[in-house]
Amino acid sequence: MFHWLRDHHRAEARKRQFPSEWEAFLRANVSHYCVLNEAERAELCAMIQVFVEEKHWEGCGGLDLTDRDSRHHCGTGLSAATGPAP
Image 1: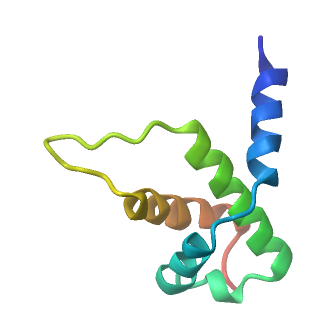
Image 2: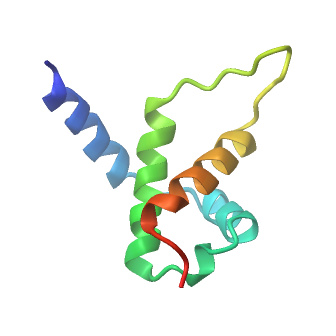
Image 3: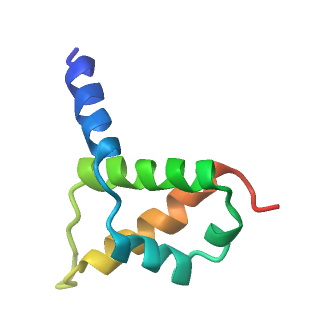
């Protein structure tokens, strides 16, 4: 019903500057990040921005989640959306 609002929020999230520490994390922890071309990297980073923005992150069983935990799950899960590494 309010898809226009969702689309607006997603567009705003995609426009934001991707944090340099997040990119450093991707380079260090997502093995095929470095073989993606510039367009694929930009799309992955935009998708991560939207994903992190839309999800509520909560630890369970006393687990405290850090910013690093959410980046790890986003980077490894969403990187599959850009296709297989060559």
